[in-house]
Length: 347
Image 1 (cartoon, rainbow, N blue to C red):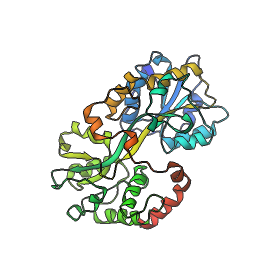
Image 2 (spheres, rainbow, N blue to C red):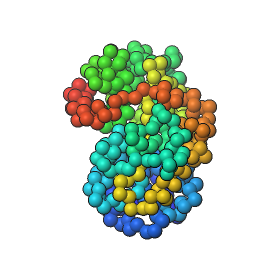
Image 3 (cartoon, rainbow, N blue to C red):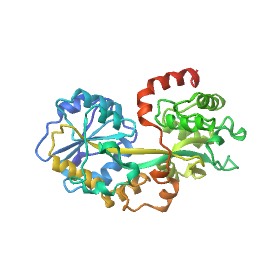
Image 4 (cartoon, rainbow, N blue to C red):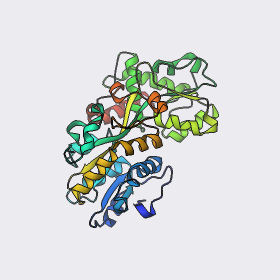
């Protein structure tokens, strides 16, 4: 199902999923001054609209299409000779694929002045897109059951936690970072993950299993079925709003947490006016809009001059201090890693 949202009718629902863009693309007839954006559904999309779209001077001319990365990337490839979108959002996994496929235009500081104030550690190669926020992947645990605080990725294998730990499955992109973390405990990495996969399998077989969706992990944390799991910093801070999750703690392991950004990019050959498109990206990167996104998503701003709360700053180090896997290697070898995972971890 595809939903086309105009700003005067925009509504979002947590967990909404749009699996195809073909119908939306066909329905999107560009009019003068209009900007078509393909972005995430659910809470992420809601925060994006509140922080960036609603505060943009020309917000009435923005149309927002909900989808996830894979559907968006596939449709962009299909429409490369007749693009229907002006701006797209992507994770750090998909952004370089879209850039490598020639689907994105590079950003220019002369047209997007606020790009100059973006932290150097988050700038993408060639400026084919730019993160609009980021958090980190560490460990969340329930202090009600875990008496000795967790401080390391190795603690996920502690005897006193055995049977009460879970982790994301390979269908969830965070799994590749966690695999790297566990592999490094044994002297490996994502490029040599054999030992890490054995540890991952130990986690899967000793507890309730691995989770494919965050709501599963949250449910297990609420019931006490699991006491600890790798998790995203922004969502972990969101637990403060849930009366049933007040005992949860988020920690950046001593070996480091992992960089987790969300980015925005210009579509190559976009039908909209380039000045309008650049103006919107510049607005997204402004200190005021960045601070608003940080507050809503409990994530870090990318603009060096944007305000960030003490709680958010404490939960996630700066991008320059976070671990990063080799995205190029991961994208080139993803199928092989997944095959190895299915044989070693899920077998």
